[in-house]
Length: 268
Ligand SMILES: C[S@@+](CC[C@H](N)C(=O)[O-])C[C@H]1O[C@@H](n2cnc3c(N)ncnc32)[C@H](O)[C@@H]1O
Image (cartoon, rainbow, N blue to C red; front, side, top):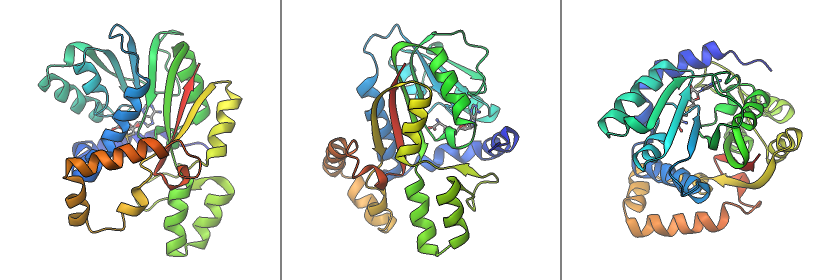
């Protein structure tokens, strides 16, 4: 299926100003902590490395890495997301260590082969562009034996929402094609099962490290009132408890379908 980059970029430019506010609030901040927890587990300790944050948007994950002293390239197609990221990086005095650049992750001609030591793509950009082209490019620009960590929108999550609505037309399309037209986006997105991701990994001959579920308790907490969620996640002890449990279970195949997104930890 051909996804129009134009529509994706238009939409991300349109909501760029409010994008960071979507990650405010106790639970969303906890989700960002899960993402950081996963990245830090695989990130080399040596600060001399070059990191690629592919489809990095406003740099929410790239900037903390630049603050730690890593050299980070944050690339994206939406200029507004990038320009907001530049302002944030400057405010945090991390701008010396980060380059924001308008680059298409499906065609990164700006970058030579084997030039990054760690590549990640979070925020499900592989639902909005050609995943095969993007994965090929991630593999090309990353050095041998280095990590490439990519998240994918989970089919199981949207399937659940459609089942509750008894939306037979969209259920059937999602199950047959993996495509999902939400009420929110102007474009159809690609959703993935665990097996779809494993097939891509095989096709492009990555070394598969792990498949993980990102945010495996989402389904449970999303049923609670937001003030009750806040009560739980504003408490550091609770947060630590759920983070520890998430660490134990995120790699368990029985729990992955509960997650909002699926992460592949790959090596070239
Ligand atoms: C949901 S945002 C995620 C941003 C960031 N990774 C984060 O976690 O906050 C998805 C991003 O993917 C970018 N994107 C989509 N297709 C792209 C492509 N082909 N090349 C580069 N960026 C792309 C969008 O512009 C958008 O900023």
